[in-house]
Image (cartoon, rainbow, N blue to C red; front, side):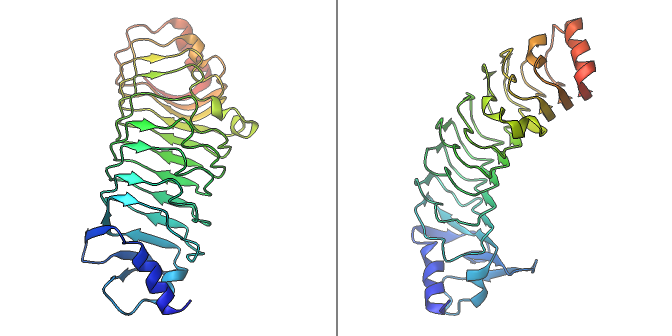
Length: 280
């Protein structure tokens, strides 16, 4: 790719930015099969030839709004990290041209809402939105991300769980919502985990350190196997036997740190039968 074209691509990353974060480098990137970081400075006239072929880019610039950008020239880009960049808004379609992306990280920003159209239909496998200020997620925000395996939304401000999330995400196996403000898990909370593939696969779900005081008896109806079900340090006073009726196996069940006052014998028998490693 001509240097002039590569320079234009790199410059376009920062059309609405102010003040870099570390060492005045605007981009940190990695050459193929090289673990040593490379640095790009937008003020530099010399644009490295390998930038367009990089598999990993770390944006090192304050960006309040992520707009649509043409990533198609970065054909090998598998990991994009936009962490601690003061991002507040993400336009619909901002990442649509990320054809080969595997990991997308937007941690440590100022994002408050996740709207429909930002992540839908991406090929991403790992999505990290932790340590933001997210209070609202559109019911269809995560629809049709068919390669999605892991979602991390730790350290946000979500109060309500939506059973509509994650429609048509057949590869999803790991969910982490630690340190939010969730209060209830509704009927069929994990209904979009009921595909045949998922029933044959162990699912990891982490709701630790929320404010959950109520779990609907059918909240986990559509999941058969958990590798992890973490409910530690919530506000649970009781659990009903029906909560685990449709679950075949739980490898790790963590309930410690809850003010459980009612723990019926029937529930204990169910846990002994279905849970390999309980932590109560």
